[in-house]
Amino acid sequence: MLIQIFHNPRCGKSRTCLKILQESGHAFEIIEYMKQTLSPELIQSTLDRLGINAEQLLRKNESIYKENFKDKKHHQNEWIKIMIAQPKLIQRPIIIKGDKAVIGRPIENLIEFLK
Image 1 (cartoon, rainbow, N blue to C red):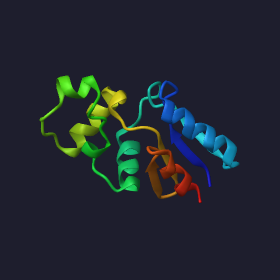
Image 2: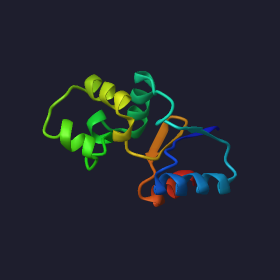
Image 3: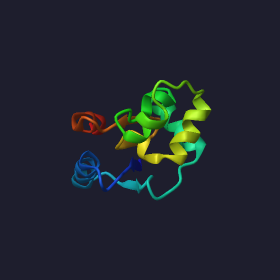
Image 4: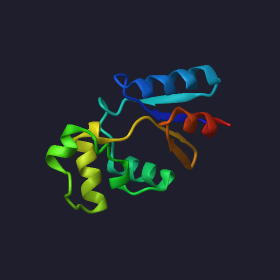
């Protein structure tokens, strides 16, 4: 089964997860979500696999969030549109395998997920 990783090469945790995937022997596909525009459908299906809502996927320590979105209420589809416009707000890395997904932070999440 092909694994997908939402990867940001500038992120240390994302690079570590990618290295673990490379060493695991599993077939995988890299989705560089900072370069590739994610579709609303892909984000929603990823949220479903993670078992969380869109707001829970946001990186709330990012300055973009603090300056523009902190304490604001949006519906699920609105948060997804915001993540598409501002992909830096998406938690990373996200690893998808079949109908399950995990955020690879902490790294132990990925290690357990691959078992």
